[in-house]
Amino acid sequence: MGGDVEDTQIQAVGDLLQALEARRGSSYLIVLSGRSVGQMIPLEVGDTLIGRGKECDVVLVDRGVSRVHLRLSQSATGTVSVLDMGSTNGTWIEGERVQYQELRDGDRIRVGGALLLKLAYDRGSETDFAKHLFESATRDGLTQVHSGRVLCERLGEELLWHRRHGEPLAIAMVGVDDLQGIRDEWGRRAGDQVLRKVAAFCKGQLRGEDVLARYRDPVFALLLRRTDLDGARVVAERIRQRIAVSELTVGPATDALHLRVTVSVGLLRVVPEDVAPSVLLDLAEERLFRAQGRGRAQLEDGGA
Image 1 (cartoon, rainbow, N blue to C red):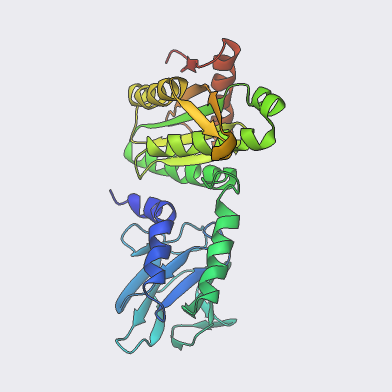
Image 2 (cartoon, one colour; image 1 turned 60 degrees about the vertical axis):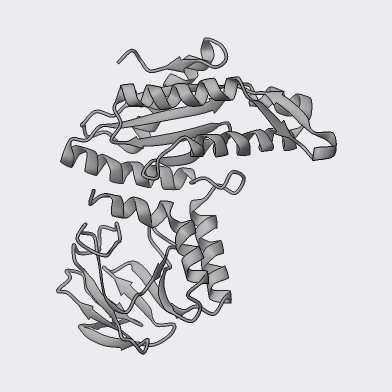
């Protein structure tokens, strides 16, 4: 379960932000660059190890970060210090390479040559800024699920884990059937509300370790960790069938529309080969297109 550290950092960010609201005045790090831009890391009293390795308290997936890169220590009085743990590319404070240094509010820490962190004390406005930065960098603005950018990054990380440990991995592409027809008849706002409701429904069927992202306009992608093709079919059928028998209510309560919406699903079992994430996503989307070519509420898994 060591690989779950990366999942928790992104998927549980809502819980993290709630915790920060309750910890006003405490210190934390904001990630200002790299894959995890906008991520907020609360610092507890004691030591926090940061690096690429699963043994670290905070895992930063970046090629320039060493396995155990640095240690942050916070005293009971709130003083924070940094100790470089013999990293390859160094730890830099405000442009100067350091071995050990006490940090001040606002200090910028460069890790591994490119990844930039900032020490801050929660004053409300800083939290609001970081929250906005995280949302704009990692979330789809309409549906609030992960963006396509996060999807590609997470798939790359999952492929490494999958190949190292031989765990199954599946991709499901869920497409809203004839979304353009809904928009043409009922308006774009109704189509947008359908996308939000389908995203919320898909999210409700997943485990915390799975990833849901908006891949394209009418298409959502699901990364199903430790899931073989049979398990992916169970998830896909649950989503496909339950949406098909449900009425989605859109619009204001005084003039609501009750729409029958269907989705089709393309499934792909990821095999342990050296294939780029973008190629795998294209293959999964091709299966979705084949499913939709047969009609509404269809499932295509390639017969694998």
